[in-house]
Image (cartoon, rainbow, N blue to C red; front, side, top):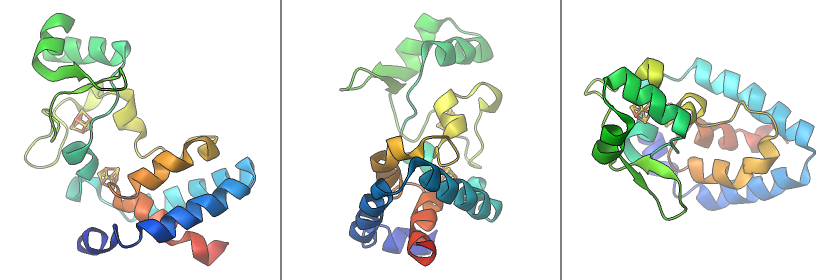
Length: 158
Ligand code: SF4
Ligand code: SF4
């Protein structure tokens, strides 16, 4: 983490070039690279020692997520919206505050079983058609040390 904090900004331009290079590759090759790296990097990563995503950005929250969260918290969706959720500039529902209101002091998620789908999928590096989200992945390299590490390895394999 200390290395990530020190190098993430300095590596951004280099990673941007790597993303441009990845955009020239086939969709299958991009998926293959990220899926392999996702397994490798996350096998050595403890998210409970990081929680940077929960501390600094909000997931997009769908209606389905709201229903699940409200049920988990035993409150109504209206109460959930009022207490925790707002609409951002792009018209997406997000948590009002960062760090996330459901992040516990030990970095565990207080609503883990009912957390939003976007939380389950973050940082999205094992999804199909990664080529569609390369710009988002570059952005995530400033938040998620796992993504930063994956992009760091790209030059070694290309
Ligand atoms: S709901 Fe849980 S997993 Fe999602 S941002 Fe909040 S603490 Fe993190
Ligand atoms: S930022 Fe990345 S490494 Fe850190 S907790 Fe989130 S998914 Fe895990």
